[in-house]
Image (cartoon, rainbow, N blue to C red):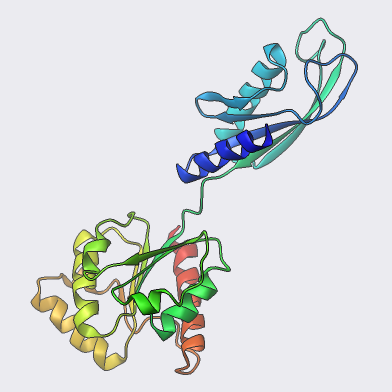
Length: 258
């Protein structure tokens, strides 16, 4: 039961599906299931398990659907089976309802796996986000930590990955140089769907980059959305401090945009 339950939860997380987990935490008198029984309820109804079937389960499913339509994250109820559920048996059940949200909706794509990216990824792993790191250099990608929140893509053509990203992705480009950043930015800005696009570099690099974007037909409106130099204006040039300033900016934009 536990293994099956965990498998169902894992599949729901992989498919970004929200659900309610209902657990029978206590009971008195005549009850239709054992304490610890659980069900998983989605917007379409019962997905897995049983807390006794019949009217108890029907009421639990209805309560779960109401939670999914609202904003509550958990609830605890005590139902008298005769008075509240209209059953003939005279027991009392206590049920705990817990919302399981999909995997993080904050997606961040880091183009490049160099020194700053190594520090940045490690900081981001401490936050509630999903990270994708793209680089053509396998040796640098191999230096990244293994983590369930980190997806690593080895790609010679990094710009081609941009169109595969979900529209809500925050993009941070810190590749080997201007020639690699420009195609990524052209693709990202042309799609005009990402809430944040930033690129590492100096003020002089920013001027050259914006000139090249204009030459390639990128509008001034799109260019104004570009964060270059990336990060907040504090700290020194050490990779760790640059990464901290980038994370600060990402959180700042996230809380304004999302």
